[in-house]
Image (cartoon, rainbow, N blue to C red; front, side):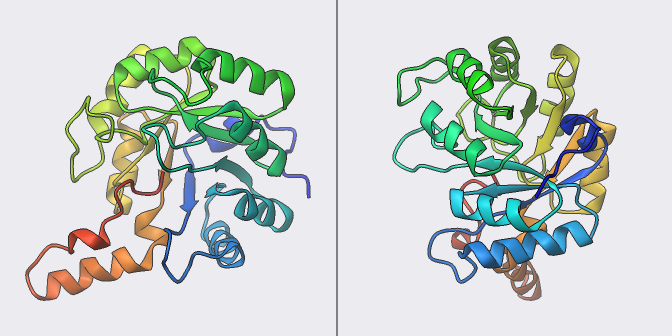
Length: 243
């Protein structure tokens, strides 16, 4: 199924909503077909793109849904676990993702390649664009210099460079927009439509929302906790929301 029209992929995202459809290990929704149905529902609701994790999910979504896809491959066991190597990135592109999300920090990558080497080779071997997930302004500058096509605030609060906020890190969005020329996608802890709109007002090119739309366990815990005057239990809060 062809998902690319005459409009450049990134331009399709301008001012729009991307929905992250990911399930966590061990939970009932961890199934490619279920995530594909979740993605279909998100597109019906107005999402212009889907962010998906894992080759099986990416393939199924690509084959069944007429929407741009940002794909990634999470590999636990290392600080860099979002599409950590060139091999993983190429596999994500070959599975059908038009944009490949990778760790965009300056940390050492498991395969020994630099971020620039990874992006250059991915561009050479595939037609995919690259979304660099970053956790700081320095990361964003580094990722742009390395050749990333767009930059996401996905890792804010997860690399030790910035405090983890309960709210979306709109300050990072503003700071990045001021110093990089590539599109900045706001992602991370965006839980309400008001926050999503605020991200665009802060200068985000597009907004990525996951947990608040596609993770019913966490959403339920918010409501259940509110009824007893408590915050949601820690075990209901993903360590890295909707990356």
